[in-house]
Image (cartoon, rainbow, N blue to C red; front, side, top):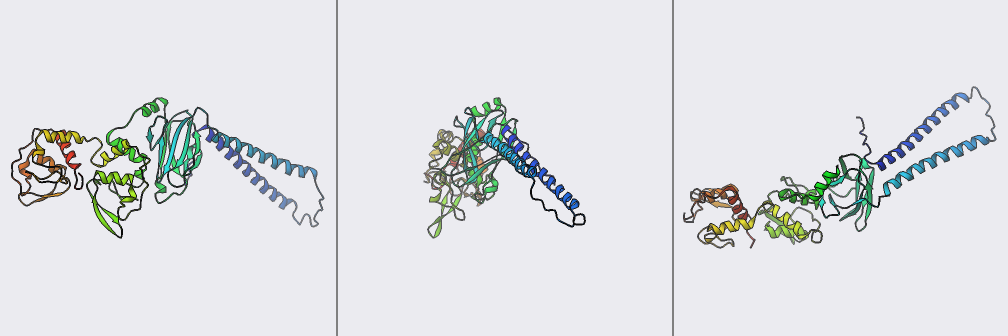
Amino acid sequence: MTPTIIQAGTAAAARVDQTFLLIFGVSAAILVFITLLMVWFVFRYHHARHPQAADIRGNVWAEIAWTVIPTVLVMGMFWSGWTSFKALRSAPADAMRVKVTARMWSWVFEYENGRRASTLYVPVDRAVRLDMTSADVLHSFFVPAFRIKMDTVPGMETYAWFQAEREGSYDILCAEYCGLQHANMLSTVEVVSAEEFKRWSESGAGGDEEAVGLLETYGCMGCHSLDGSEEAGPTLMGIYGKERPIVDGGGTRTVVADEEYLRRAILEPDAELVAGYEGMPSYKEEMPAEDLEKIIRFLTGGAARDLDRGRSLMEAEGCLSCHSTDGSEIAGPTFKGIYGHKVVLEDGTEVVADEAYLAEAIRDPEKTMVKGYEPIMPPYSHLNDEDVKAMIDYMRSLPEGHD
């Protein structure tokens, strides 16, 4: 298999390559010279031609040559290495600064305007200084194309810098074994035009896209999936409203993953560990309340939902006159805990109160009458899809155990 050569993406990286090629070239030349010299000596001074060994007392020119030539070569390689090292460490004073925080198992990049991301976006031909630290254990920030590799150390700040010469995507890896998901601690440097970087820097994602971005930024995606697969931590897919087995002393107890549970799990994860999983770092001091709420809204049914609108619609349509939100029974079943739970219909059929069932129950209640209740609910066929979705989102926000 032909090895892949990663082309240098910065001027400093090119100088590192030049130093490497100089050392490699000198070493190869010395190897060839010594090998040829040995072969010539074997032939020239074979014992058949020189049965009597010559007694050589000294040769001034030979001694000068083997002293001066190696000295010049070593000093030349040292000078090349020193200048390439200085090129990697001498960040320009006007460099754009980005704070880099490593954690198991992700990278967080924070810009001077407060924008945070899990991918490093930079403008082409602009010097960028990375001020780096670690939130947990030793990591190592490695960008092969830029020839930079620098450890990130808890409680200590290190730095590196680069100035990308070409637009493109360049891999970021962790070069220090840091735990079970070390191999997944990946990201990229996205080098874009100055105009595109400005648009990205000044824009902000919204809705689910923003929430997923926050999960990536805070390293949640290093241990939790969104597709149902189990990794180092439980999947976040459909976690809202599900029962979770919590380690409690020598046994376990069951809690429902409502909004308050999810909030505690993020801010104080060690207080309620899910059985079968290890602990995770606390975000109590690190995560602003605004980011926490965006993540919670995403996990509880989508960052774009509007619970106030759903409740207002139910009040306006008279739903809350017959259905409570606190678990008490009025004329109809309580909304508290109804989403995702099984209900028994008049004909004895048992169904799950999912989104499709609730939508039909709102628009055509006679088809979905719950056993034990009077058929007094009118159809709400005049509501559009957005109204029905807002109502269902509100019901979904009221799992059992949530007041």
